[in-house]
Amino acid sequence: MRDSALQFEKKRTRRSRDGITSLELIVSMILIGMLISTIMPMVRWADHQKRESERRTLATEIVTNQLEELSVKTYEELTEVDASLLELTDEQVRVLPESELTLNVKSTSAEPVGKQIRLSLSWTNSAGQPARPVKLTTIVYPPGGQP
Image (cartoon, rainbow, N blue to C red; front, side, top):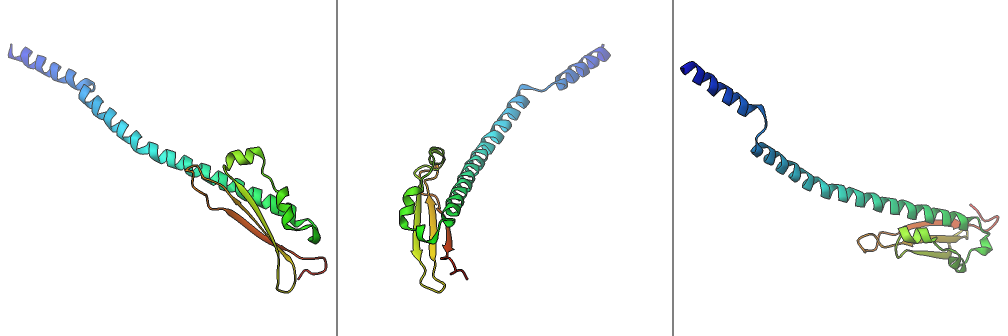
């Protein structure tokens, strides 16, 4: 009879080790929850940085294209009045909220004489703060006046 009692005890012990207990399941769920709660802020931060990088890339493309259009104008056509011709599309304004494109044209005093064109684009980032503006500058010389 002792042998059968010992066998029964071995079977009972083996059965209790076959699966996972509720405690193990709860602990693993808590650990997974802690892991997810740690990772989610990092994922949000990375997504935010990606959007800001895309905005800066778009702003750089806009300023580069506008400056290229201005640089092909004749020397006499380059004035501050051209700033009114520089407008952003609705899509660009949607991506770059509160954006402002500014143009500054001034004559250089040093030889050779030319006109310095400075184009700047500023906007508000997703946090509502002013983003660092994108600025590009070039110099246009009159015909025959290039170095």
